[in-house]
Amino acid sequence: MTGIGVIAAATLRECTRRRVFGVIVVLTGLFLALYTLGTLTAFHHLGKPAPGDDVDVTVLAGATLLGLAMFATLFLSTVVAVFLTFNVLRGDAEQGLLQPMVVRPPGRVVFLAGRFGAAAVVSAGYAATVYAAAVVITGLAGGWWPDEAVLPGVELAAGAAVVTAISLAGSVHLSTIANGIAVLMLFGAGLVGGLLGQIGDAIHSDTLSSIGTITSWALPFDALYQAGLHALTSDTSGITGVIVHLGPLGGAQPAGPLLAPWVLGYVLVVVALAGAAFVRRDL
Amino acid sequence: MPDAFAASGLEKRYGRVEALAGVSLQVGEGELVGLLGPNGAGKSTLVKIGCGLVRPSGGRAEVFGRPAGSREARRALGYLAELFRFPGWLRADELLRLHQGLAGSTGGAAERDELLELVGLADVGRRKVDQMSKGMQQRLGIAQAMIGTPRLLVLDEPTSALDPAGRRTVRTLLEELRGRGISVLLNSHLLSEVELVCDRVVIITRGRVVAHGRPDELTQARGVSVETDEGERRFDLGRDEVPELVARLVAEGRRIYGVQVIRSTLEEAYLEAVEGESR
Image (cartoon, rainbow over all chains, first blue to last red; front, side, top):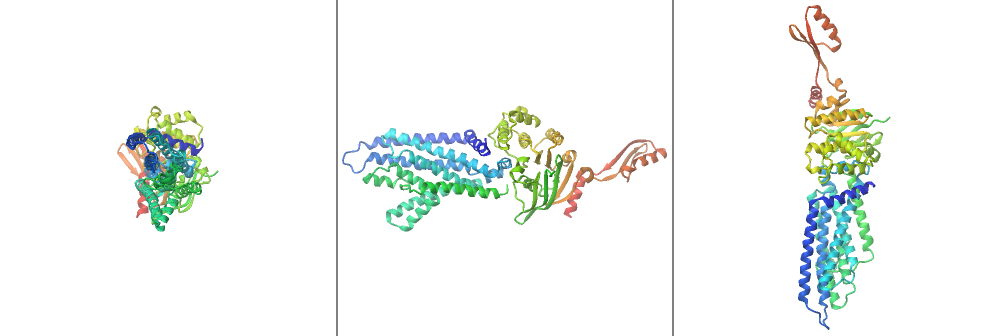
């Protein structure tokens, strides 16, 4: 096994060993149980859609509930991503955990790449798994399935990988707590920026729209979340389509052709910058 | 043949603080060199530069002729940090296996078992790190540093958490390493430990080398003590003059029960060097 594989395997083993991951699994189970209860209750009270209704309430309820679940999933996977990476460099160096590893032949860049790879796989996998569970729960409880079932999950997973990269980069210079707070605040800023953009589009404010656009490029997990929301109901039209595309906690926006390459490049550049800073840092 | 470790005019500044101010020293192949100095002298900074953990502000540091911190240099060394800590969720054997993977060692279970045996942890290979005492973790750290049979072992305060028995184990281990031809740079506060095992000693204070040499070179003759029938008498003479002294005392009718050449201890030499620099 190469150095990067050894580091990644150790990180993945750490995930299964540390008690806090048991807590994450239990709390995620509770979240999904709560979501199941909420979804069953909501669909139970909806009643049957009447012919001639302008709004398909089943689609509206399903898309709204799953949109909320996506928001919760992005938040939870952000917490997981931050937890996996917020102390990886400076925090672990201050504790003396890092030095014995990076004096080994693979060195710092390989160490960082291995930690990022494993943390991104875990946080992205977590996001995809929770999203898939929410889709199944929504479908079984209310008989509504998203127009695009897979793409939103992929976009949420990519969003988690973006947060992982940002948190890893922050850990080069920031202490553990400072980095955790900074990344969660960036997460909030990204979502608020997206909301402002939606409001700007609705009231035709170029300033607010620009804020939304810039935020989406600067913190693309928000753009990925919006694209995922849009994909849920990409084939839904009419008044129902207009309403569901407003989306809960941030409106839905289709992904442009540049989003995927931008996200890929963004992650690579952020990790590369983290590596360049890490190599120069005294430990 | 390049030295195992060579520092030449090494400088390191942290802002306005000058940690190293032109340190030069060598550790020959198979040599055991002790690094002594007060707190804040720059010893750990020097060791960290040697391991590639800290970048020097000036000068050069090489490991077997390769720049310190390069992949080739890292391949040649094993390191135990002063502030040693290992993931608590790993078992002792797993920690060694992880470092085998990183060091590219093909020693397998035999190497792990041998190293655990060598540091007195043969019975606790399955124990998690966070269930070990500080002393056991330090022993495990020494075993970790020896993974892959490094040609240069850099040990930063390797006995700080050990009891006297543990220190003795480490001393025996260091002597065995010397027997195997492994070079060791030992940073320690324990002068007796350094005096007992090191081939050479380098004393650093305020980022400068203030004394270096073999322990017996650094210590000085302080006279001769002779136990006679009239009691113990001190003479301000050197070792070479002992036969004549004994012959003279016997000729004078004295009965000699014991003769001892008195030397200053390494501790005295150390304090003289450090305090001399401070004045």
